[in-house]
Image (cartoon, rainbow, N blue to C red; front, side):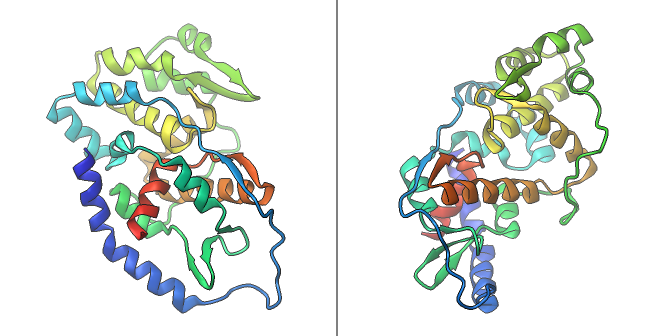
Length: 263
């Protein structure tokens, strides 16, 4: 899997070069004389979920099952093999400028783009600029879990927890289903949900929150997941940089790959 990550990074080179050229052509977009009032020091927590279970599941699958997963969800499974360099992320956050939404080095600026993240994740079968929008009256979390898992209402109600004011389900409640669900497609879908909840949107460690389940269900409607992934990444970077501390809750694995692809 590490070789696949390297290959994907190389394929991203063309998109990366185009992105750098475009950003330089756009030049400055702030009002002249604007002064950023940011903390001098930044202490960022980059704590991640333990991904050993996901690695175990992936290693147990045969090539056919992996192929079906990749056809449906692109290369997101590669993220489980990425070792996040916490010191690298912590160092880069110090160069993040919330006003420009980019990393600034003297007069040079760099920022992850939609095109780069699409290339890294090999997102296909989506409408490029179709954004995820939450319905005003979404289906209840319990009903979503029942539909995703084929389990009973009683089972779903028992699994739902509340952590730090966030409604979610423990990964441990889904692990057995990912390993042993009689429907292979259900196993594939639940594994993808786990990656989105534990790696891409890891707000509550060890749990998958209701917002992620709602987002995941919209993937079948052709939304481009990268738009939301980048929005959450920028939001977390902005928060950590402005406060001078905090936990980075964007996709650290993907940001890590992007940083290395530029340096």
